[in-house]
Length: 225
Ligand SMILES: [Zn+2]
Ligand SMILES: [Zn+2]
Image 1 (spheres, rainbow, N blue to C red):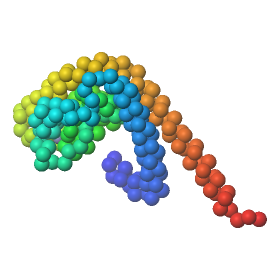
Image 2 (cartoon, rainbow, N blue to C red; image 1 turned 135 degrees about the horizontal axis):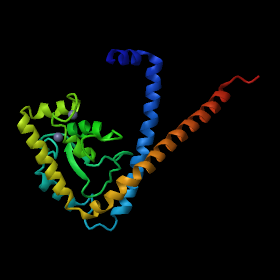
Image 3 (cartoon, helix red, strand yellow; image 1 turned 90 degrees about the vertical axis):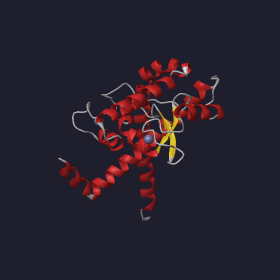
Image 4 (tube, protein in one colour; image 1 turned 30 degrees about the horizontal axis):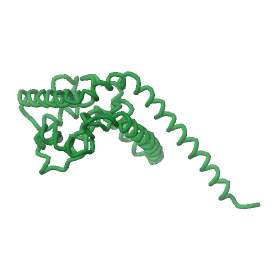
């Protein structure tokens, strides 16, 4: 099956089509992220701790000991990025608010995207819990995330222990933000549908506008008779 997929991608026209499809989904994903950022600002206006404030930064550093919350690497020596526990996409509906924003190493941040981009999660309720649940015993075949954790903690017992410790540490960190926990249930129930609509509307709009613009460009370039 894999070789068939590779052959298909070698076809230049199919390659071009998949690039166009990706560009369209990039636009729609960007719009979702913009919407979630605005929504976050609105929701957290009255919260006592500010996500971009010094107090929150110190709190996160202290709680996680300036380590990646997932793989525990030292972030002072590693390239780190802003990490949203619940990813800011249409499936995970994450917010840019205290309790959901952390610093993580770039590798974990990108490995976690596989779980974040699944419509339905099989291992846990949220993307970050799912990411930390690939302990090598729960996936039918050894998946890429299971392999990733194995590359970090090769010993089965240690790996399970560390993944579970990190799950608990993040859970107790989150419990310090009751305002977030209060809005979450209604979010995860109603918003995926709303954001799914925003996503497909954006794609339809992009498609229509591109088509009409192309037609105008096309008729303008025709020689006058
Ligand atoms: Zn990491
Ligand atoms: Zn797995």
